[in-house]
Length: 256
Image (tube, rainbow, N blue to C red; front, side):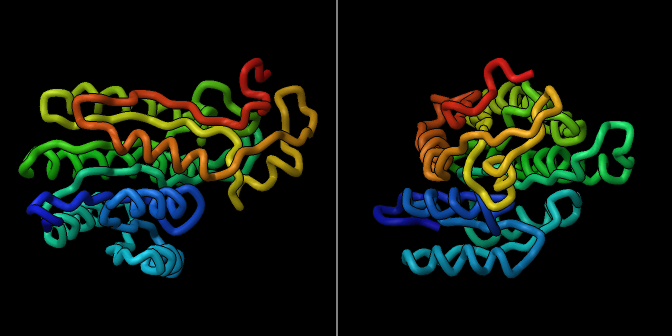
């Protein structure tokens, strides 16, 4: 698919696009001229994101998929190739968490469910994006992984989530290295205390390393969107390997 003057239209796949960061970033990327592929497990939230995009004159591709399943992920990217012929940006945003319980109470199934989405899902999408980005003309593209500040400074009772996000940092670096000779850039954004429905407990009060419950400052979603848009706007000969955007007064530095 081409735009004006036969310039290929920019195409972005956003996982977890049905709510929160995924929805907000999809709207931001659309404002920058990307055609959007909205990915998530549930159709209705994706339709809600699509409705907001269409109000702005964009017509996204809605693609319900289970990114933790290799077959489903392969079909997703085959559809992207069939519909658009190329992929310029993958935002590996989809994430999952589990009960906040002591490590010894976490079940193997709960552990696996987090790893399946947060790590395996990101890997499978990256693998398929690599295959498409390496073969398309012009070749190359960008992958942005949504990591977490918890990878370096975990909260209590977060073993599965923290381990998955720590592994994402390794995946980011390995992807950046392997992509270097194919014009594929990969970077990671680590977010601390953004205003989302799923993170509302942070402003109400959340468990601290010393066992106390304390409220923490949060920041508006627009700062995360602006950060991702900046990373996505760079030419492929420049890359943000790691970026942390956080509420200034959150107790991150010195946590614990």
